[in-house]
Length: 142
Image 1: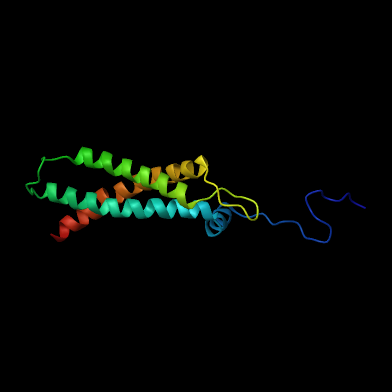
Image 2 (image 1 turned 90 degrees about the vertical axis):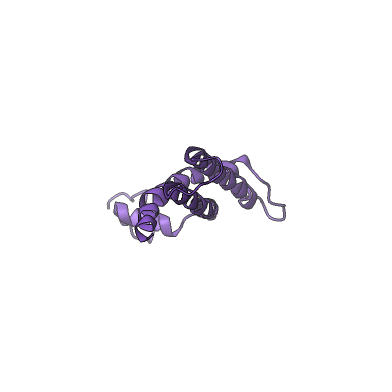
């Protein structure tokens, strides 16, 4: 009689090996709620601010006389800073720390950190989409 495999429970079949894509797809479908909230918060902020930045960038590109002149570098800095700040603060407010039954949800600095680190790549992707995809498309239509 062969020794029992410690990784298999009695009466169950061994776990099947999944490929890389299957594992990532399952992780995507079953993402933890705090991560989803952090990503959605940062995505909404980046979308709204990205549309504002794109409108400013297109206005400058087309030669519209705006007060202050060409401040696209400052606008980029403000965009990234605001997305990071909004993502951090709102995630801090809407992602409570896990607690036992009957207690008020407590806030944790880790919720804010989750929002900050979710906002970093989202801000970058929003800028790439706005400046490299949408701007040439909109300028081609005008």
